[in-house]
Image 1 (cartoon, rainbow, N blue to C red):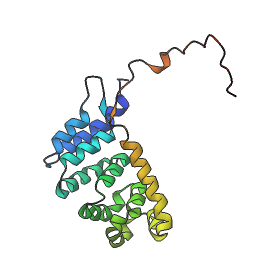
Image 2: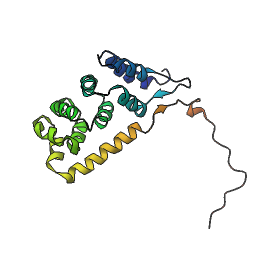
Image 3: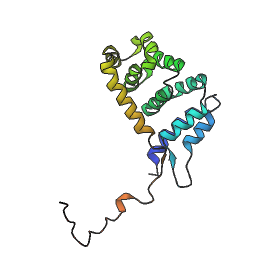
Image 4: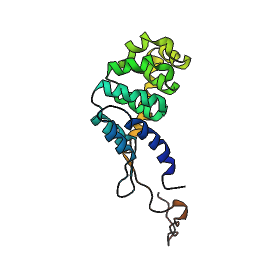
Length: 186
């Protein structure tokens, strides 16, 4: 299997779908998703999200990208997209209208967001029962769901670049045992 092959297939699918969009930032974002640094680094969600914010400044372009993300169905991309669009009422409305096309975890995150409350209320029938339960439970169920969403997005975007190991970790040698035994601390 080629280096980073497991990363390349979903990346290539996402990049191919993005570059077919008419949005001004589509081709540069697709190129960035496919890019590799001189050290073999590959952009991860942190860097992709930052580049997305730079290139997709208006709601129209973001809505066009949303359609591609829904077709692709990658939950990670949708979670990051939702997080980056949380202050955009027009995008939250579109997400709520298309709730049935969203994975359940993204639906639960959407209904837990105070910014999306008006849009969610208008389209609640489109949501899965698990998301509707989060909504119906009020702040007591929304808060933990929001915390899970924030934690997952933080985890996804924490690393801007993946730099592959120079050596196969299975072939690394263990360090030699210390010459003198370690003393216990009092």
